[in-house]
Image (cartoon, rainbow, N blue to C red; front, side, top):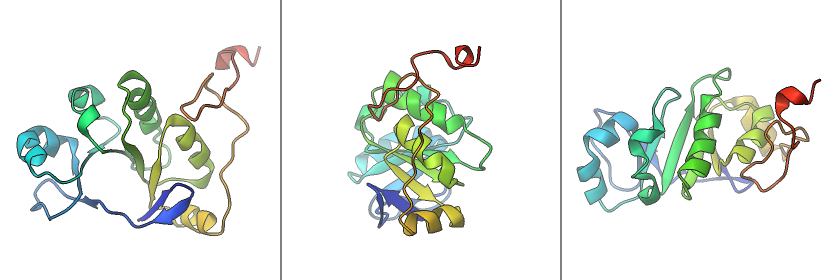
Length: 166
């Protein structure tokens, strides 16, 4: 996958590790299940640690751990599943997460601007057309904002979405 961060592609310093894999040296991203099962051992490693949440995972389970995590990865397993947008807003707004918020998976170009608005810092992209568009210098822009406010500091429509169409 290609890591897009700060408006450009960068080297990925984190390695995603499966639940049964031996942990390598350096920065790793583990599943929520593994994090909860091995929290003390993972924290004792003294290397950067990220946690990957799947769309159905409960962020509340790691709410107390969020301030100490440098990276929270949220999975987009398929383009039609947008639950990670809500998880991103909850992480930033409810729990005050200040680390890197990374979208992982099938990320379509037309969703990139919305991801940034929801608080994502980095995108680990598996969708080849999205990678190609970003490599070509296309900038994701959205002039329509469905939320009244975003984590990007831009204001949206102050009305509730269902009131705009009356």
